[in-house]
Length: 98
Image (cartoon, rainbow, N blue to C red; front, side):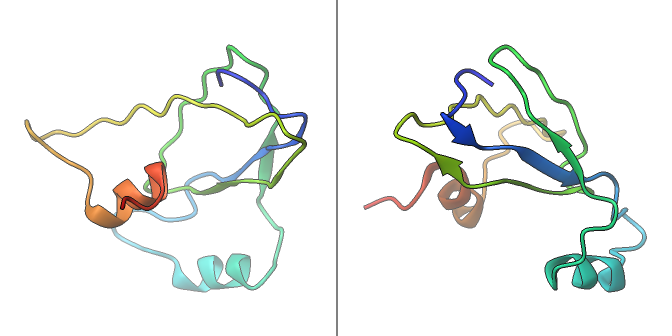
């Protein structure tokens, strides 16, 4: 976290709801339908570093409030040299490109 918003912007996640051998579509489906079981919340202050298994943990940031944008630095790890984000992931991280 580099800068917090005026309000909102909490990091919500369900740690390790999925794994490589089991996508657990039943549990993910319940979560996407509105179930709140297993959700953890972190309200980070600027300077907070959060490490988590994003591929296996459903996660989101709640809507921010106020005019001050929430600013994060996102670091990712890839095993293959030269790995690049897919077009969909680039759009999710950086927004639509023109």
